[in-house]
Image (cartoon, rainbow, N blue to C red; front, side):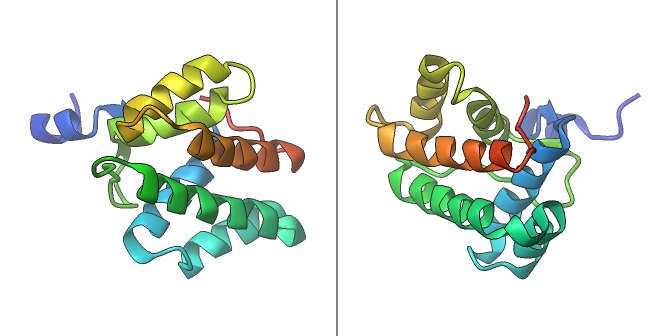
Length: 143
C-alpha cells in the first residue's frame, strides 16, 4: 500500500535519496528555488552540516542554482520541501552531482537532457565545483 495517490507518484516518481549529503542538496535546491538564493533555512542547513566551513559549499550551490536557471531552455520541476519524493529533474541533478567527477560523459548527457541544450560545460563545471566542495569537507554526494 502506498501513501501517495497515483497522480502524485506520476509527478514525483523517485524516492528521496538515501545519502544524507544528497538530501542537503535537495533541501537547498528546493528552498532556493522557491524562496530565492538567500533563503535563510538553506543557509542554516549548510551551516549545520559544515560548521565554520559552510561558506564555500553554500556560495557554490547558489552559483549552480543561478547557472541552472539561466541556462535551462525550459522550466526545471522542483517539488516543495515537505514532499517525500522527488521529480525527474531533482533526481537527475543529484545523479549528475554524484557522477560528475568519475563519469563525466554520463553527467554531461544527463545535464544536456535536464537543461534541454547542447552546450552544458559551464553548468557542468558549477556542478563539479559543488560536488568537490562537498567531498573536500568529507561529505561526498552519492546517488
